[in-house]
Image (tube, rainbow, N blue to C red):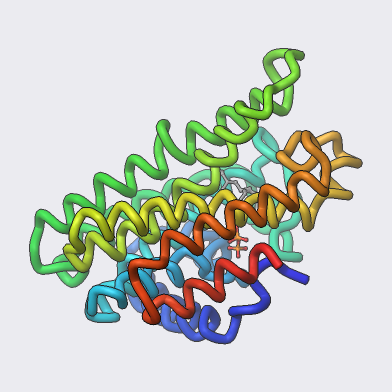
Length: 287
Ligand code: GRG
């Protein structure tokens, strides 16, 4: 079963709304036709839109107009799509398939895939700078800063670097569990954390609630990564890939997943009944 299967009906509805927003804003973008084709290919190839779903759900807690949350979610999805395009490149994970289809560099070529990734990354910040995201420029600036931090060298890009190191490209030293944990946190969880925090930023949430959602997103992301690794455990072992699961074994990883799910769920307590959907999302990772 896929990690996110349980709460797909609601996530799917948000996903469709995100697709509508992305289609509209991409239609208005001027760029060379081949680049546009590659960007469209990369972003409309069946992603679950999980990060925008979390952003929209968290923003709803503070009565943020849905249109604003969807725009910010679309920006976040652009960053996610870029990361997958670049991750699949021969110099990175060298993956010919993504979501069951040829990866972008296979459907086009390497140079076009690199540029499509670059375009998606920069496009994300262009979207967040739009007044339609929030009338207050200070809120938009905060979203831009936080996304830059989450996606950049101290976040996802840093995590990808650690992943290459752990893979043994530059040294034969065996990675510690702490290093693997840090890598997974940066590579995956920080972007989930941004998703939840962004909802709070858009809603000008009080610090306590914003911190709780930021932490919730981090735990959700860590749990999501372990759930994903558990799903891929057999293939990862065969490919000698180092993940939390291959490092500590399936049983211990399951226990860690349950612990993270419980902690993430606890972070939602201050929000009462309004977080039923988020709770279902969390539970679907660990059951
Ligand atoms: C190249 C800068 C750079 C970063 C790459 C995110 C990432 C870092 C690599 C992707 C490879 C990977 C397996 C990451 C772990 C996180 C993960 C499971 C991503 C897939 O996320 P989903 O399941 O993807 O949300 P969909 O297909 O639904 O969009």
